[in-house]
Length: 106
Length: 123
Image 1 (cartoon, each protein chain N blue to C red):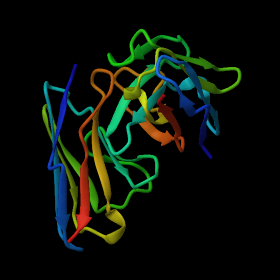
Image 2 (image 1 turned 120 degrees about the horizontal axis):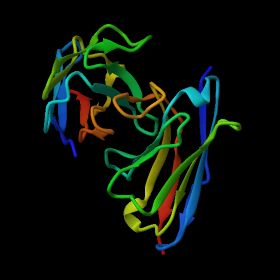
Image 3 (image 1 turned 60 degrees about the vertical axis):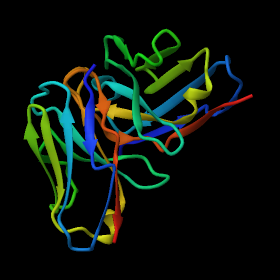
């Protein structure tokens, strides 16, 4: 099974800050990573697929990069509405989620 | 508009069974794989099971293999999850999620989600 190690588990940043979250796969998964945003009590929302492609309707301050085993998710300028938990997901071999990163405002 | 609506959750005793359903609309159901994803209270997301759009080939997480059965009815645009031998560790919100391709292999899941249904396993 492919494991996804996501870090940090939580972070606190100021409005306007650049925020970076990483996911490391236990084996080479090419570009097969998605990133989701989940707000409390809500279903997850797809933000990024194929490691770097922005889902339709998602603000351009969200971006993703990486290939192989190391992947990065970035919010270029944190906004109050971005407070949520973010998850990576690999789909090279079935599906596995990372442990999540809770993003809070400082 | 794509819509997914889960039903069937509730309280069940350990060792019991429960069947979840997901009614869908707004897309060509048989052209896409579907998955179930769950979330224990205060925990992260866990993929549970997936099913091919037409071939009915199924896939399961090790944690539910042999206890859960995923199925779909392409004539009714519905997805089901039969859950047997439930344990307290199965407690959580269960989401159905639409896949991005007909096969769940090599394709992401989750461009659309239902609102979730809560399953509580407790005596």
